[in-house]
Length: 401
Image 1 (tube, rainbow, N blue to C red):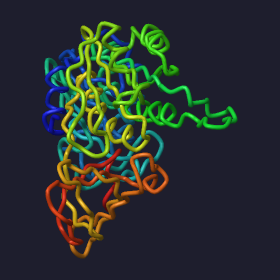
Image 2: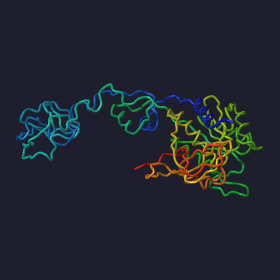
Image 3: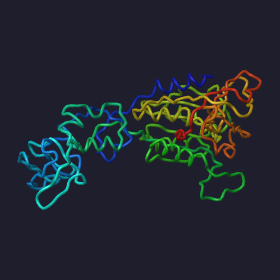
Image 4: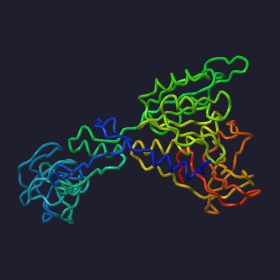
């Protein structure tokens, strides 16, 4: 069997980002940019007022000056502010020639068409100089950068309505097992509701996959092949169940019949020992165990990095350190990834890890409050409380105030 490090590295060495596509800005948020976007002009394009007030000459400080007119935002001006003159101006409006300061409305006293300026005016105050925010030709978005709503605003300000970006992969999910029935259906004797399908759909959506597809296949080669055939347009296909060594564990055989090459099968870990990874051209297949917690862990540990790299993102997952609050029995030859809950101990300036081992890899009830997986190395009789172990967050780390 492979170690968990070897399995992950093989997956990442196999995965390549999808080819970039041209996307409208409204559909590009969260994607990875595949092009450089440069500023097409200076921002602001002229010296602009940063306040509602009066455009003036700083040399007129302390004097009564005439108000020569009003300059709202969006109006081009071709006037000059002569000595002893001023213009009422709005935020974002271009300053007239000769202006070297803007005085906010609350700092002047106006009477009719004249205003009394404060005794001190600093040249340049409340003026956004031409190009002070962004110079023409400057790169404002680089390849590999995640497109955020602010990045969309930047591109829109330069007249771009679309951008080249790496698309998110299409994901298909196949729940296998004749015993499974849909969530809304009452199970008969020996039947159970399909919980893995909805769980994997939710995990895929949580990773930014907008429309994952779901199928169910009974315990026959023909049924699994039919489901695989329906998902040929998916970049990543997840099959849950049917990957172990039982007589009805037909996923490896079905993938072979489908024309896929099995890259590895089984990893030295708990949960998720039967994990399978296969490819057919650029299409990736993950055979996940049928036990819900094992399926959840394998998605977290292996599928998530594959989704991220396929979508052009950094697949690396940061490993944190924390102290166990209770002893945890390790597994003899396998790395044990135990569902756990990490909480911050501010006094000790560390994370405290409460393991939630449950009774088996099928026990999702004890682990449903978990927010991380703690990594327990093999080969010891017991990992005592207080020992420092590595852990990774299941979703986003909690905020620390």
